[in-house]
View (cartoon, rainbow, N blue to C red):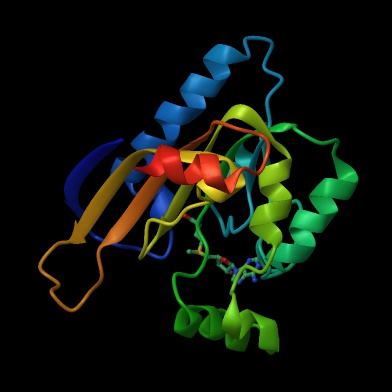
Length: 199
Ligand SMILES: C[S@@+](CC[C@H](N)C(=O)[O-])C[C@H]1O[C@@H](n2cnc3c(N)ncnc32)[C@H](O)[C@@H]1O
């Protein structure tokens, strides 16, 4: 696993920041090169107004109905709908860029006049990651943005490939942003094996 360090100015649309877009583009290229017929699918569950809305291979979602994404569902409901609307093992890439903590999540919900449910205060993303992980192809990628590097994790079959640490220019009061890239290395759940791999 490789680690990189850089600095940037954070914005509400991180995937538009050129340094982050470059990372995402690198993995889009890898996938496109493996699927020369153009038949690959990526998902962006928290898309806002990202470039992914105009990308033909991306299925997009955002809870906030002002954003013109393919779906406007809460993340877990989106994961369930994908499982219903698409066959299993069909996705090659996920961009996982949610609100980064509970305070920010609550702010989004307040902004659209919705209440958080009790389970969200314990586990913000519920079992949505489990549902999506099962539908990911072997060799597929998850690119997670946030204040931690958990990503989807080995327990869901994903091994870390790279972590990019972004420090915000001149703002000691702001958290670093981590961009964690993981690759799916196994399709069965095997925690014992996962622990050995992690050492
Ligand atoms: C960090 S922003 C995403 C920014 C986007 N990836 C970009 O770079 O332009 C997080 C988005 O998640 C949406 N959101 C918040 N809670 C959600 C939930 N429970 N399910 C789905 N979307 C949610 C918000 O409306 C917001 O647009």
